[in-house]
Length: 138
Image 1 (cartoon, rainbow, N blue to C red):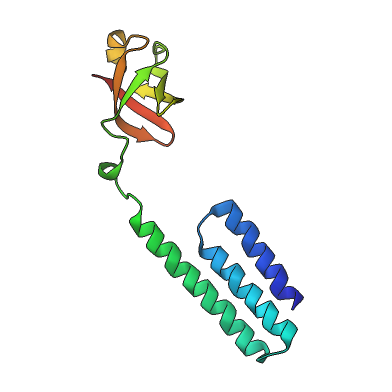
Image 2 (cartoon, rainbow, N blue to C red):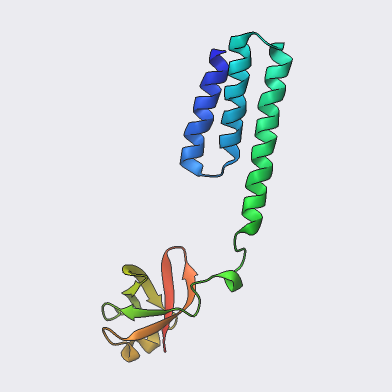
């Protein structure tokens, strides 16, 4: 029983770190297997089966969830949104912009357009690179 509880705790800790949902179901399966072991019902074969079913169900749920996420830049909802320049760009074209009520790191798509950027001026998001917005003057 204790090894099932330790496995459930490990799966929960990894789930918190990754956020995939797959390990949540594996932890649930391990928890049910621990309950079966504590009650003395079914034996080890049933415990392993319950854990395996939880792990498989979690994998399927995680896979379905991944399919619904945008998979290309064309599906990026930030593209075309307007942002406000909070500062003038540095020589490399990096600056901070205000979008959705907070400041974000940004860079100009073409640093040569830096003279066209004014503090408080509007820019358009043309791409994203992680949490950095790639912007261009309107």
